[in-house]
Length: 145
Image (tube, rainbow, N blue to C red; front, side, top):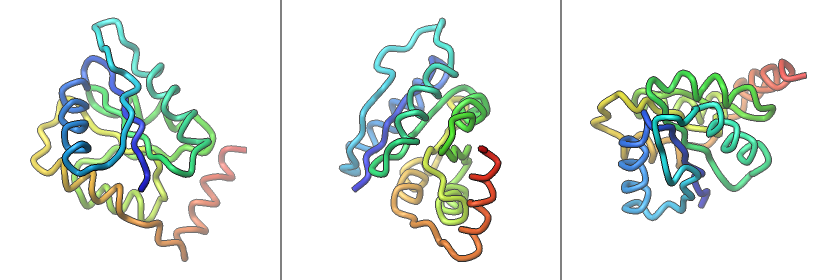
């Protein structure tokens, strides 16, 4: 079972805390890489920390949260080997894994998620579909060169 490396800035703390509670309930291992948050947090620092570790790992996913989720997505995707996906619902989470082989789930700290548990479950359990999607993810990897 893959673990999650979780981090947020101050704007994402509430959603991060809710996510951690759900990970515990779901018995999914995790590590909180941003145990303390304050107003001076800068989301690129947390995105870099998580993305660099996830890019080197085959046994973990990242989970990042900032206000909109956009900043974390942009920053994390600057790290070679990372495919961070900002998702809004369980379908986005499933497709991010199935079609894009995403390895970091990004959420908005300002959004009210009615289905957060389902989002986490879909991201955690969905396998990469390969096939035509593999050709496309290889093209994404080539953009990193």
